[in-house]
Amino acid sequence: MTKGDTIVIIAAIGLVAAVWAAFYLIPKDADNLVAVVKVDGREVARLPVASPEMTRAVIRAKGGDAVIEYGQGRARVMPNSDQFCPDGICWKTGWISHPGQSAVCVPNHLTMTLVGPSSDVDSVVR
View 1 (cartoon, rainbow, N blue to C red):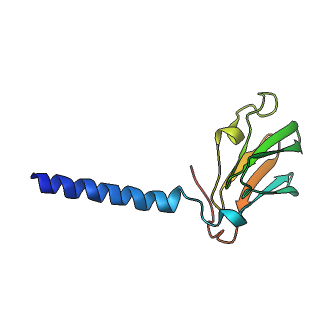
View 2 (cartoon, rainbow, N blue to C red):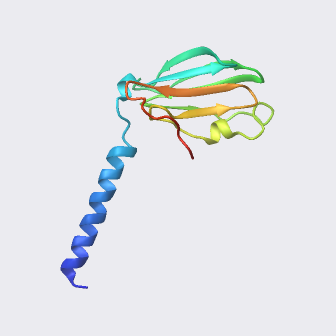
View 3 (cartoon, rainbow, N blue to C red):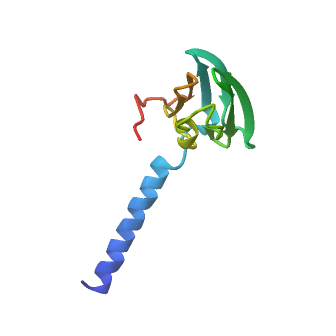
């Protein structure tokens, strides 16, 4: 392998990484994203995630209060006690920033889903 081959391979890997980042890391239509929070299937809040500063909302759920942090094009369920959510899957999901992504707390019947104009995703599997 020559020095030119190495440069071409490195450039190709860099190009692939840049394209991947543009499609998956940069939220599209972040200005129009809304986090829809439901408890027991009833919508309890619509939180605009496009805000430039981070904001917190307290949502009354079955087992207590859930704190949701949102802004800057993303949202998440804040860590809570083991009594509230024993497995912690809702907060371990982390930040969601693309239309169609959800964070779910099954023991408390709480769901948070991002919706926006390009919500053409049927489901997200991790």
